[in-house]
Length: 236
Image (cartoon, rainbow, N blue to C red):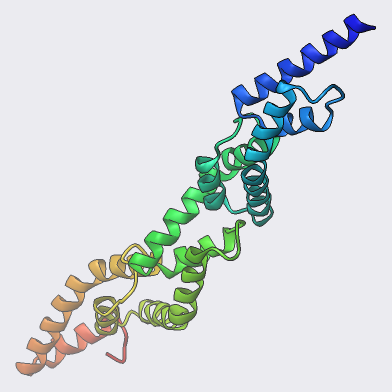
């Protein structure tokens, strides 16, 4: 029985020493709470170290669990960088696994929101907000929602104006809309309009000059021919 007691005590001491070496606060707390031997120097050392670590360890674990509940990848990364206990602790491992699984998508959406906010890419911001599955109280997300709320109606109106000008082949109006476009130059509505304008613009200018020349010289037949062949807005 005495030999069994010594072996159990020796094993408990080994666990405690290893926990201290690793900064394994969870295991050390378990060693202390499960101690069934005399309150010897080993035990007192374990208690002192556990009491020193316990407040910070509990706070760190609580903060990580809260961040996990919010799906706060940015917050988890910060908490992981500040973690000062055993890296294999179950709470830290759960946080690290979540960041590893979701970090790439999070980084992509963060970059998309930052770029969209900087360039006023409303379509891109809307898509990023739609795909966002992380902390709803993120300042970056709030900024994206604010930008869309403030400028979304104007963006939609400008897009509709571009579509209408393209559909009616109203080249002067299309030029004005493209020239005054206040949003991202990578926007697909803008790029489509710009392509149409690049294709139509030179031909429109040539036909306009030819028609004006025919009118100025009273060449009625030439003017009528130009009007008949006019491929743009008939109300131009």
